[in-house]
Image: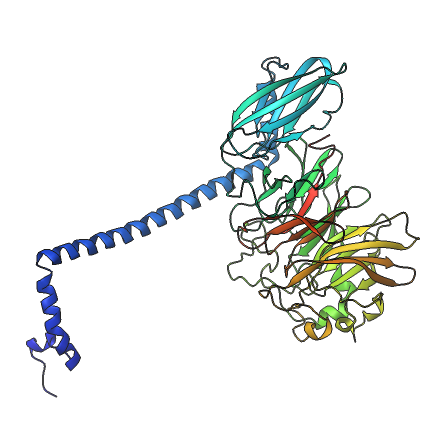
Length: 586
């Protein structure tokens, strides 16, 4: 091999390079001319634009992270007794600096940090009077929101309440109407320029089906978990799809609202349940402790203690415990270990879970914590609903087995009472004997959610109803060998192939050991999460959680109204309508 000369280092190494070299040289010469200078300038501007855009995007991302961090830190403080006590002391000190009558009404917006769209209102009247209010945003197209606050239908001389429903970034007019015992009425108005919401949620949801003439029920729709990696909130929307409440929570979901002794209870993280008064002040705090986290649902027992679906962080299985939080002492105790009740079945289930994110932290006090994997643990039964009955039993819903289970004596000596599920799924196990007999021909549920117990005095003893959102999705990560499609006619086994889910209502007869389908209709498909709620006016509220769609149907399944909510990431966990009677409203 001959040695390389200094000139060889710049020599082309192939014939193709030899062909392109002259063209490269001519191009370099062209760039020296007028057109070349213009082209060069354009290229430079383009490069600067791209770099500037990338830099601006990076700066925006950094700013958003800082804003989110500050907001999260602020909300963490809000969920402390010290913050709430100081907020209460500050409010009273400001209010009591002077007297306040109907001509000098005291107003403080969101005094406790828990209600972005709320205003604390206080004043006295010389004569006993009833009170109501209307919030309007005259410079917008949003409809007015009118309500009678709690105790507002009583004649009193002291008036203290929270007015909900202020519209963000708009001039709001709060019109307060006072009615005296002789029927005389007079009004007072408060002008307020409302700031932004703390989240980027829609002020008014898009409606895919409008029907303002139909009775949609009395109250507000509570969005109980619009899951995201950002700050979490609970939202209230009215029947026009307009936001009337934004309540920040620490992280995770609110699951459901419980009311007792003038307080509203909800979960604010995987560890915390709080009690809020009607003015927005947090006055009760209950923690699941270091060993347990809550997930998916909770109820009161007949004594007002919390019965909570839980995961034991010390074990390798998840979402398979039921704990009690004593409402008086705050003590946490284990009531039901589903592993003990289903020992032989749990032993055969594979080690798998729904959540598989590698980014999930093991810190259950972190907003990045994934309660559905915790992380990478065995999710063999996945309880998602609990209904506590007066006799001390409970009905739970198992998504992973697509089975409804009644458990006797949950606070003393738990045992399996019965199960409702697919016979072939339980065939050959020790638990097939607990299955109720199906009356009639209909497909069983696939991953049901929001199972609700309804007693009916017109039914014979031992009979009652169970209704639910039937996801119609057949999948069990811990039973990969089971063929759902072959065993449940019409069931969907794909999360991405949208068919339909169902609203199902069963009549259960414990005396005969049977169940039958008495009502069903098709709803938008959602393979996971979701909810169903029978409303007091006979209509039915359905949330198809993975679609971000919720709507009101007649009892025979005719769609009346429907709204679409932007998913902040994955799902709307549940949507329930609450009338908030004796809480926000009279």
